[in-house]
Amino acid sequence: MYGWIWRHLPGNAWVRGVISLVLVLAVVYALFQYVFPWAEPLLPFNDVTVDA
Amino acid sequence: MGLSVRLVVRTLSELCITVGTVIVLFVVHVMFWTGIKADSATAAQVDLLRRAWVDQPLPPATKAPEATGTLTPQPYAAGKGIAVMYIPRLGEDWEWPVLEGTAPATLKKGLGHYASTARLGATGNFAVAGHRRTYGDPFKDFPSLRPGDAVVLTDGATWYTYRIERKPYRTVPTDTGVIDPVPRPLRKNAAGFDGPGRYLTLTTCEPEWGSSHRLIVWAHLDATQPVTQGKPPSLTG
Image (cartoon, rainbow over all chains, first blue to last red):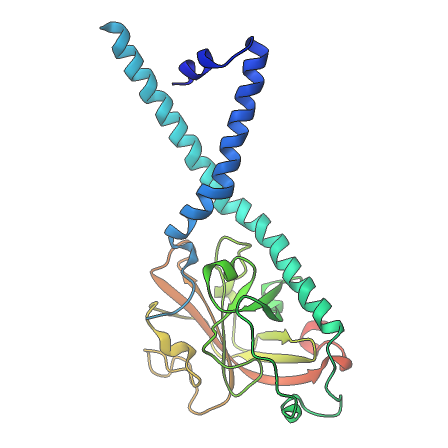
């Protein structure tokens, strides 16, 4: 999977390294900004109120 | 043949490593990142309240707050700050904004006032929910609360000092009687109130990282003083 991505990135090893880093950072950003805030209420830490 | 088996095994391994990394990142998010976000969100809410209070007319210092009933108070606006809470037992610099409502988005920015319950300082039950863990862990040390501990709130005009009645009461999430105007928990006499009064209820989850139960403490209004007289003794002492 990662090998396939690496082979399909343009440029020499340095350029590919930089692009990979940017891709990793973009994925981590998306996780923290969108995915985790969505997933977190599915866990029980938010249930602090009494309700029927 | 040998090559494709290798490809499948390698792809599976890479997927497992990826999933593992995402889980570790999620734990970092829940344990640390929500706290960092809550720090700035609560500080901003306290700041907003203090700015609003600068422009707010003060009630005459000679009158008790209930005597100023001629000034019809503004209804609380959902998601907006209404007071700042201090509980010295939970730390000298324990300071949290109380916002109107208990929606998940509201509880990320501070403690939440149950919209159906009484106003701060009024007859009835001013009930407040807060996170035990995540989003700044406001009620992490909830079990250490003891009878006589002060819960101090200010709405910019008045300091309200509530006193905790009993050790935290552990109950089930459906025990909604705990936030009644005169608290009526499932276990009779757990609250110990037998008539109307100016009460306060705090609720959070139990166990720390779970949601099977709730922890509750009750308090009654012990003293009020106008902000012009400075901080109440339980904060300065």
